[in-house]
Image 1 (cartoon, each protein chain N blue to C red):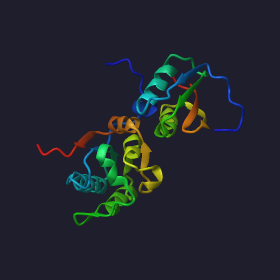
Image 2 (image 1 turned 90 degrees about the vertical axis):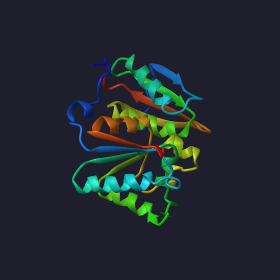
Image 3 (image 1 turned 45 degrees about the horizontal axis):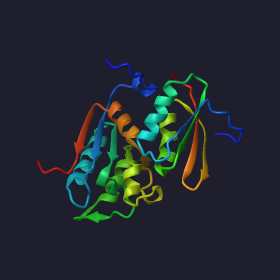
Image 4 (image 1 turned 60 degrees about the vertical axis):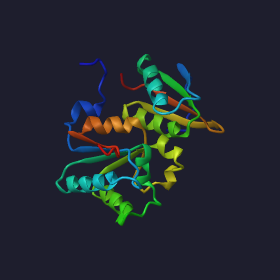
Length: 134
Length: 84
């Protein structure tokens, strides 16, 4: 066991629900659609859901994102947020791609790896979607 | 955060040139060496850090006294240690 002290939330909260890490662009991979469908299914079952977007995955949080290959990703992301899902992005990666906080879907947190770490610490399961083909 | 005069920091970290997550990590490590009640001033020039270092510090149970933009793309973040 490491000597690192735990934050208050780690001390008292049981690990529950799912965290999703998405690093793949919604324009070039099916991963974003898969994550949104899994997230919505988990929320319908009453599981807490947390989604962290980094690298090209941050494009999923862009207001300007509409339909991609026939799927309205923005509406699906908003549905996740409305159902109580938490969504944070790597603000650093977003700014590198010209996505400032005002360009993000309402409710998305312009966060950091700290948020990612918190999501992992709170969740029973963590699923990573990185756009790889193998 | 209030408009009250800011206390003199016990320690100042110049993090200009650093980006996330190092700005938070180095601030957190500095706070770990300080006593409860002491104030740390972190200077950053990376805009996401000016947003995220204070958020993360609050998440750790620390008190953010102020975030001041003191120049073009330069911010000072004042944090009082509240938790060990």
